[in-house]
Image 1 (cartoon, helix red, strand yellow):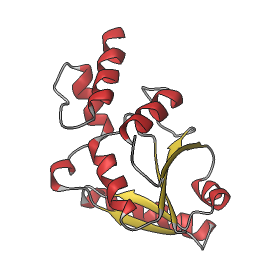
Image 2: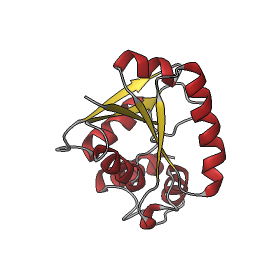
Image 3: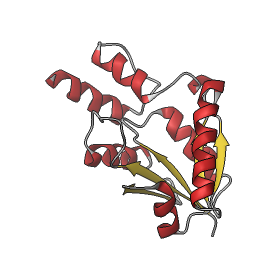
Image 4: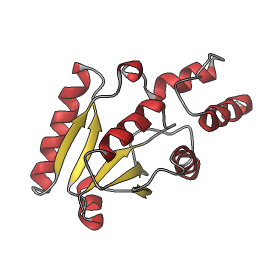
Length: 160
């Protein structure tokens, strides 16, 4: 079975992320959505909230697991016997940092491959940061995230 990891903070998961998961499932037998615990980013949503949102969005989708990880991604990939890391590229500017990470991962664990996927055109601009900023300022995020995620964003920013 060919297993891939799609890592990220997913704070929150967007339709762009979900599009990449769908694309990855066409290439791999199983995709593990790996939610980073110790990311240098300070997430708006707790780990539990992020996992909950991802699981709700992926209900009924076969061959996907949602797991959290901390430490090095390559160590996690060894543990779960993944053969590939899936990364999304929205713009040329993403490529430079993603390539650097891919090369470091290969240096640390030569058996892992990084596969770069691009989202559908309608999601090319989309990021969790943009979605959070829009939601926090009262903007419309419809079509950018699943309704469940939209509701969680509204709840989160009503409190602040």
